[in-house]
Image 1 (cartoon, one colour):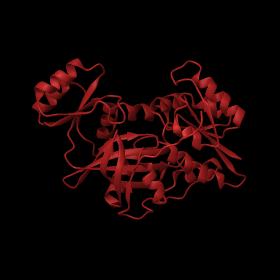
Image 2: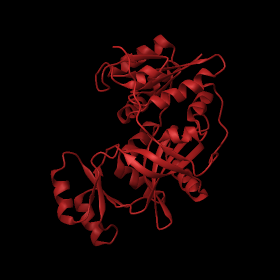
Image 3: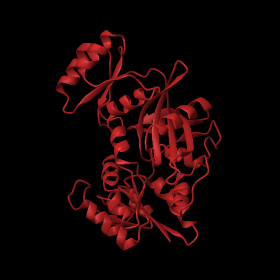
Length: 325
């Protein structure tokens, strides 16, 4: 039996259902177990089994996860939350020694993706199309004087996620105030005045190559996640994505944000985990849980880039779980 443990499941009910569908049909069967630090996380109640665990920053967290893995004979760990990517990437060997696969990119790549200026610098160094970014107010002033960046700009936390703390700024006075009084380091990025796209990418755990890419045009966002989107297929976009992925040591599910400005694609950021808009890909038959399950059985996945129908629209809506305490 193949068992996967999904960490910090939160509200990812659909994702848990997708994994159950994929793993329950495996030869010998499969199980999907989840954890969260709150009993109010609805996705807990979708899984085959669940565990309440300490908050991730608790000193006993890692030992508790390993204890669950040994008790449930877990084959693989899947993090969904940014800080857990760091934790698992840095402690991969501890789990691998117990025969547990950590479905996460290497520690250096996770760190680069989370450090938005480091990410910009790496892509720029590799000649990849990326939105121009200044690391500080002082650097912005120099870049602005040289014509490398212009207003309007985006201001965002260097290690932010979920669109938290992002602001559009149209003048130097407001930019100075935001940078001066921010409680955390900010970077300044060229405002992307164009169409926004998202990509769900699966990098095979065995071949280390991207074997599935699903792209969509974002129609509406809510709380940093794609709420409405339309599937698109553009060979030029696939090419940019593949070149970008090859510049990093990524593994497993990857979420990428891209802008198209004046007909050219620019990479905005990469999250080395499942994106909130992934259900669109699943319903278009781009099924990462099945690819993960096959990898865990020791089998390499064949490339299926762009193997889906274009112009399929996803429209999210709210749902609820009611159960006795």
